[in-house]
Length: 409
Image 1 (cartoon, rainbow, N blue to C red):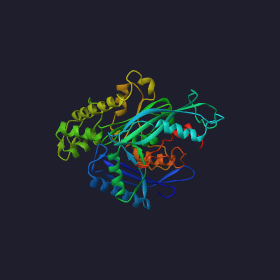
Image 2 (image 1 turned 90 degrees about the vertical axis):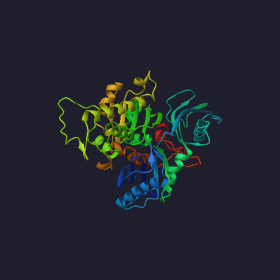
Image 3 (image 1 turned 180 degrees about the horizontal axis):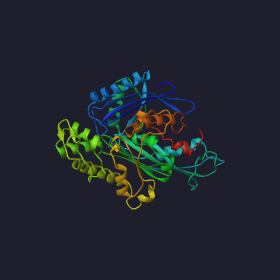
Image 4 (image 1 turned 60 degrees about the vertical axis):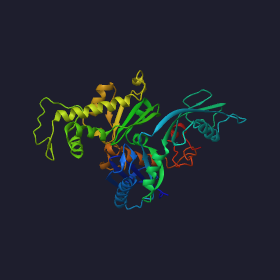
């Protein structure tokens, strides 16, 4: 078990593994004690493809975090992503059978159990059940029904499921280095804790976390999750396109993409000498580089928007889109999105958070920082959020419970 007051988060990504050790003080402040960042191996598009290589990458990251923090890591919150992640919305309904018709905590547990009564194939298990809205006798917008009179209690939930084998492989890698899994958290939900504002979640916003192997999508509306998805295209495909299109080694293409690429370049009057566009003896055209990267980013933005109803997305997400993840550092990505979807767009980083060092205030670390924030918000769990299926012990509810039910039950 984790030491009281110490939180560890491990973001096992396709390109890097980031481990953060932090202390959670009674005042609510978070103080980062140590960080371990290492290149990732053995993963592809968020999935483990080589157990040994993946475990060694995680081991190296954990050891760095232990050395810098001075704490032995015994358990951690782990991020989950991959094409195997799916989601569905479902509704649960129960009648209030008490003689006085007063809603009690037991009724909340019953309605949640009713909401999770969906058919799931044997090879899949529930990762999160997230309450979205609660209604009592048809009255919507109820924040805390406990103690209220009524006859019918409704709850609408967002249910996220994962493939058993994929999650087991991640857990096996972590446990093989002597670290227990405190909880598993869908990565875009974690990232949203670090980069989205409550106002954006309330108005309606899209989070697009463009990582190395996947683009994780989370849509928020009325302060709660509306939709989640994982797209199997991200930074790796960007670099591969540059490598193939310009005839470069993959590592050189990755470096040139980071150094020079822009998705909204200005060609006129831009003077690039041969030395400025040379890397390891390889020279490329600035315009060709930017054209390739822009085409792929345009495709990613279109795929993200296809997750929404085409006819009403302006009303659904008036706060627009927030990009995060390492690939969102590409120059001009927010301007391109504004031109394409005619909605607000910005790049989100874990900024203005007490106790978070400057080195982590980068979109690339949104998931790792978000995992720490997720853990801190769920330190004092309600009886609902402590309920977990026996499979991975991975069932958890997002902090939406605290806004829906603003007191412990």
